[in-house]
Image 1 (tube, helix red, strand yellow):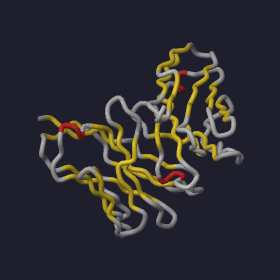
Image 2 (cartoon, rainbow over the protein chains, first blue to last red; image 1 turned 135 degrees about the vertical axis):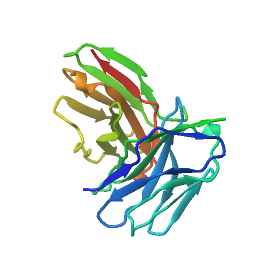
Image 3 (cartoon, rainbow over the protein chains, first blue to last red; image 1 turned 90 degrees about the vertical axis):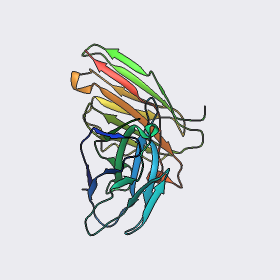
Image 4 (spheres, rainbow over the protein chains, first blue to last red; image 1 turned 180 degrees about the vertical axis):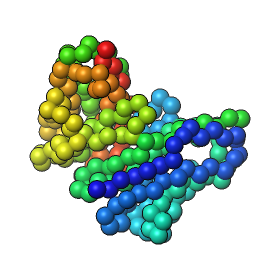
Length: 112
Length: 115
């Protein structure tokens, strides 16, 4: 079945540093891919998505490109802020298309 | 309220007791999902409701787990004879029929601790 693997955390960065959080997937076909974020004390929320190969999802300065050649969907941001401190989850649909399968989450801590 | 509401936010119970967790989805959202997140693990899909269709129960880990939803409103997740391995954060999410899993709205979860 479909599955997703994301890099283990925690990731600790200084403000304005470059961020990459790796995510690779295994899937039948080419499903949509997602990044969700959970800020402290809040529920998970959709950060960005890409619906087909070579698509780039972007939001709040974050980007991720759907790469079918490497089955990857890495999350990047050029200059992180303290307010980006959160847990980030990579996700894709299950084979039935009824729900999302999530990675284990990567905790990002940004210090000023 | 505007978002998905879950209650209680925290629940401590003794091994062997039954617990009920509640989820109030966003009004008008026909799809409702339950997930479990154990410490250090990803979100584990439990069950999916879509309107009046038969639920997808494929993620329920054992027959001690069950969930109900009345129409398109509140859902209750019940865990019978709780075990220590049931300790986790239980998350509820909802979405519209049109969007489905493309955009899930999550509640803040119920932290369940089984002693």
